Image (cartoon, rainbow, N blue to C red; front, side, top):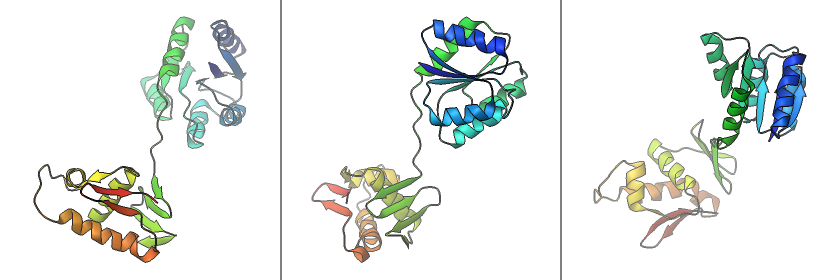
Length: 223
């Protein structure tokens, strides 16, 4: 693994670096928080070990800044700051683990290895897009070719489900369960009516169909 260690105490930094290196890892050792932010944003690491008390940029601010730039590398704080509130603050800043000094190197190594085994975090999408049609999941808005489309709440939920299943056929029963929360068939044309209204808003004015009917099966979104 490649590990970044950010520690300004020379003896501790050498102890950690030498131990991780002997365990077969590649270690980049830095002493300044600002340098670590630049290095951590540019390079890919498997785990980052961070002291809280750092020159240039403290450990909490460093981790928050890394997370803000999209760095999802697991982080373990290695620090003498050991109050309960301090540990909570470290975890809430974006840290994944917290080990208090003085520490046993065997425990640090075990925690580093455990963090590296975690599956990578999946970044939650905030927009869905098919062709020129875009759904903003945060603002709950819809646009096609840059033009806003006014959707009623049920129309929005229907479109979101269809777009999340782009390229897959979605049946009438699936739509009744996921959009209307019906676990039985009410024997109404509610799905067909909403599909027709949705087409009139997202397809008809634009000359290219994105919402397709699959005969005797259901519906599918694709460009």
